[in-house]
Amino acid sequence: MNLPETRKTLSLFQVLLCGAMIVTLSMGIRHGFGLWLQPITMDRGWTRETFAFALAIQNIVWGLAGPAAGMFADRFGPFRVLIIGGLLYAMGLVLMALSTSGLAFTGSAGLLIGIAQSGTTYAVIYGVIGRNVAPEKRSWAMGVAAAAGSFGQFLMVPVENWLISGTGWQNALFILACCSLLIVPLAFGLKEPLNAKLVHAQHQSISQALREAFGYRSFQLLTAGYFVCGFQVVFIGVHMPSYLKDHGLSPQVATYALALIGLFNVFGTYLAGSLGQRLPKHYILSAIYLLRSVTIASFVIAPLTPLSVYIFSAVMGVLWLSTVPPTNAALAQIFGVQHMSMLSGFVFLSHQIGSFLGVWLGGRLYDISGSYDVVWYLCIGLGVLAALVNLPVRETPILRGAVPA
Image (cartoon, rainbow, N blue to C red):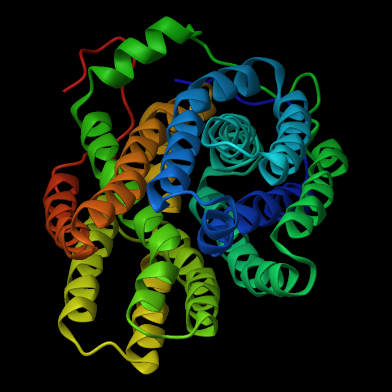
């Protein structure tokens, strides 16, 4: 039972505006990384696996650093974490452009940008939302933040393609590095008052929170489902441009496809967040994963044309990041918001392990077989599995002091 809150909070408008703009930048820039695969590998003489491995490391580092970033954000506030993340993002993009070996490219595009993303994306922003937005609006607000990330994808992909075409791939990365520095001033808008943390009748330490969460069945199931989300979206986001080009479609088709995913995900994530206020979140998640499998299977079976690509991208866009609001809202509902950024970071770690395997296996299996078919089939099967895994999730708040069911 929580004591009545007597605390200052940031305004809803301020939290959503600054949080949405930060997510727009951090998620928007990374969403277009697949556009660099062919120009970088051709210019440097690398295999696709070299590029894919660096982005795989980026995703796994992002996941591994996420819990630590969340712990610092929960303990000391998100302000410092966001500033460090913004600076690392810019540094990583600059070094990514200057790397002349696969090892250096992995260190910049993989290690540095991965750490930067852990401190500038959903885990940290959703912690701010959880502490400053009323529970009856929390899922909706998370949907707005996720929709902003989707808008960033829609906005940034054509911009990045235009920058690559007009200035060259290296200069395009330098320009994006300057853009990422805007995260630093935006962080000031999320600087919470010193008394912004919830006052709990029963304080819960970090170790207690971790034991409780990892011993709770619903946390385990949400974590397993998020693994599939990462596998699917990162494989598609990184490898679909090359998959389309291999089948004779122009680079513009891939650009429009990624932009459509971002555009339609604006609606999908907002809808998922809004529905999370009215419907059981685990049912929403099961439906999303099942619909993804149906959509991917239809895309693989149907003849590949620009129209089929655009239809696939629009439908997948609705489902793309729509898992994020209900997953995080369910965490807040079950465990409360005291350690939300940290717990969200651990769930996201599972997502990023899936991302690592999705992007790396895409490059590895392509180099071995000359085809992406096996990975498409894996995406279909894993989606069905995730739909089943989310059905037993229980969203009722934990009663502290009782043994978790």
